[in-house]
Image (cartoon, rainbow, N blue to C red; front, side, top):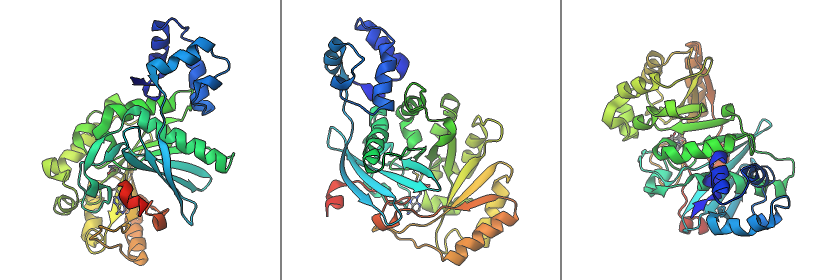
Length: 347
Ligand code: SAH
């Protein structure tokens, strides 16, 4: 059965027409589910009774189930979400500077095996559907409104479990649904897709909504990047730069490069020189992520002084360079710490 939350508005309208209803009802349904977060058709009072009953026969209206919530001392919240087949992912809600970002997962596990990442130890179980991606947003927003009725998610980052460009069509569809003005209407600048540098996916970005793109670079020298990220073996940094050049960027948009800082591995003067020679300060923004430790980690985080030095050196070379605070690390909700095996989370 098709899932309601996998349907873009024109698709829903076509389906309704084919079932003998007016296409306009599609807009009403979008308002009920995406603006009012009312998922039970019985409560869609301005929609015909026959449709309210029938729709369940042709559409799956399931949303993920929140099976665990952890609240960090910094107010970051991590949710363990379960889908109909029992698979689980994590989503993280991050309140900061008046914004409320939700970090969504795109796959159950991940295929790319980055050496520093906790999710990688899970391997790839399966792709999420567009409905499961949109559903994460819906249940987290609905839940948080019960905690505080003024809280509205302002930003979405695809930085949870999985490689979003490895599940291209479902992520693309989910973004189009989240952006539709008849529903949530999130602006393209409020959505960021982060990729490990999966070249086949980057090459398809000309057929993707023009959201912000972040590249998990982590090393600007092949010998280091090969050690950290198996995805680099195939085409190396040369292949990555080539693919990035083809990303259709609108004027003034910079690509963000995420750079994980690992003690004594990629935090040296040679790494700064390599970064400065690869990236153009006029186009690239660098976001430093001090390594977040997790149970399977073999790497360490550099000292705060080292991180500050690395940032200063890049700023001296005219780069816009920020340090990402590790939000929610006390509940393993920070970057690279997500792992959804239910057994482990229940311990
Ligand atoms: N697969 C995508 C989406 C995941 S984003 C990508 O790689 O971009 C999660 C971000 O956290 C990535 O930049 C990832 O490289 C980073 N990360 C992974 N493990 C980490 C860790 N232990 N500490 C800090 N950041 C980590």
